[in-house]
Length: 422
Image (cartoon, rainbow, N blue to C red):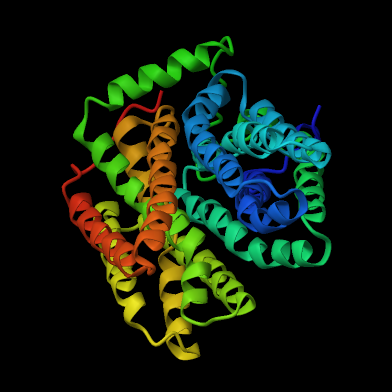
C-alpha cells in the first residue's frame, strides 16, 4: 500500500504525481545527454573507435523514440507505476553495468540498447499519460512543465556532467546517472498511485471519481500500440504531426544539441563558454515550454505551432551570420531556449483532442518516434556536411528552412474535434 492510499490528499495530490513524473523525466533526459559527454573520455580511456561510440549514442536515441508508443500502451495494460519503475531500474542497472565494460560492444549494449529501452519507458508519452489520468483542468500547463523537464535536463546537466568527466573521466558520470535513476524508484513506489480513484479522489478539475478500467494482459500492449498506429495512420493529422515533430527533433536535439558546441568551437569560443550557452538555453526552455502549455489551454494549438516553428526557422537561418560575441549569442540563447520544446504541449493537445484521452498518449508516442528520427538524421547529416565542407553554414540554413515549412504544415492540420475518451 502506498503512502498516498492511506490518507485523502484531495485533488491537489495530482501535483505530487506531476512532481514525481517531472523528476523521472529529468533523470531520463540526463541519461540521454550523457553519451555526448562520454565520447572523448571513453576514447581517451579505451582508445575505442569513435564510430563505435557514435553507434552507441545513435542506438540509444532511436530506441528511446521507438519504445515510447509501446511504453504508453504498457501503461494502459501493465500499469503506469510498474512501467515507470521498470524503466528506472533498467536505466540505473544499465549504467551501473557499464562500469565493468572492457569492449566497445559492451558500451553499445549498456548505453545504447539497455539504457535506450529504459529511458524510452520514461519519455514524454508517460507525461501525456499522467496528464490525461490526473488532470482535467490545466492540462496544457502541466504538459508544458513536464515537457520542459526533458530539454532542461539535457541542457542543464551537460555542464555538470562535463565537469565530472573533466575531473575524473567517464566513470563518475556513469555513477551519477545510475544513482540518480535508482534513487527515484522508492519515490515512485511511495508517492505515485496508479490512478486518482486509488486514493478515492477525482482527477484535478473533475467532479466525479472515475472507476479504473478492468486490467488487461501486458502482452496486449503490443497489439494495442499497433492497432492505434493503424487507425491513426489513416488520418492526415497523424502524418502532419509526425512530419512537424520530425523537424522539431531535427532542429533541436539533432542539430543544436549535438553540434552547437562544435559550431561555437569553429567560431573561436571555448568549451566552457559553449556549455554555458546550452545551459542558458535550458533555463529559458523551462519558461518557454511552461508558457506554451498555458497558451495551449487558451489558443488554437495549430496557430501556436505555426508561430513556434516559424520563429525557430528564422533564428537558425540567422545564427551562422551572427558575430558570435556575448551579446548576439545571449540573444540567441534566450530566444531559441524559449522555443526549444514549446512545440510539445500543442502537439500533445492536438493528439488528445483528435484521438482521445486513452489513445492520444500512444499516438503521441508514435509521433515522438518521428522526433528521434529527425534528431538522429540531423546529428549524422550535419556531421557529414561539416566533414565535407568544413563548415556548418548549410546545415543551419537547411534546418531553418525546414522549420519554416513545418510551421506552414501545422496550419494544414484539421481543427481537432472532440474524440471519445474511452
